[in-house]
Length: 328
Image (cartoon, rainbow, N blue to C red; front, top):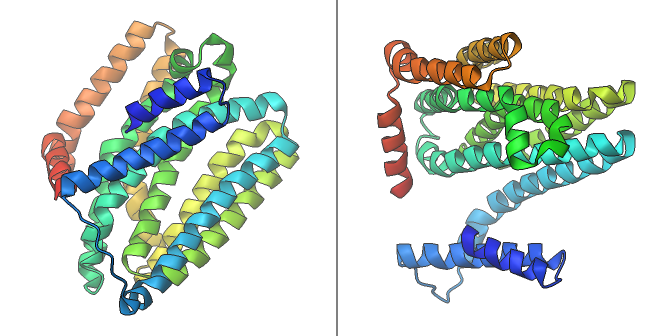
């Protein structure tokens, strides 16, 4: 669906459709993926309507949809505000860097949440089991995927050169900061999914609204103090939003807030250590071969020595189990 939609969107752009070429991409991508999913699952439409089913799901659906709308409004307001208080070049670098960050964080968060929601919902009435499963999910995702985001943060310059070219090299610190923020964005979205899995839709909407208001306040305040703090303000807002989400979830499941935060911080520590080592390598040498060799060595030791020995996580078994669950 992505390949066909991309080709048609490019052809539409070349034909002079301008912004409508983006509309073509969205419509074709959605249509093909929907039809393909129906064909693979052999799903058939049935023309029926049950008022009882509507009443059962309406409240939950409306509230979770509103929470998603708040997210969309937040992202768009953020663009408008930063465009007003930052320079044109800053907004440009931020926009291009954020595209790369969103591809990685949104892909990870969406993929994991699609699998996690139906699994966790089954245990919503078994609070201890639910907490155990959710903690295990955060630990596994963090230990497996956060190091990759850390590598991207350190290798931001090379990624910018590869994707956008040398004229965008000034966007390097923006991408590096956004990839660090991506770690907290994924954590926050996982936690919001846990709240959703508990069917606390009303609380989810309230938490989302509060998070976005606070996030905007942090970004606007820091950027107004110094425009150079635009990227730092985005990272700070991501951390604050994560803390609010974690604290809210902890209260809902009757777990001490500090305990909940400590569990997640322990998951972040290996990635923080990896970041420090990789950053030191970049500072000490500009040789890309040496940098790549050190990164490959550290990642190899991390995934095939540290994780199996100290965290009992097998990369192969985890990926296989995830694919099997996704297939089911």
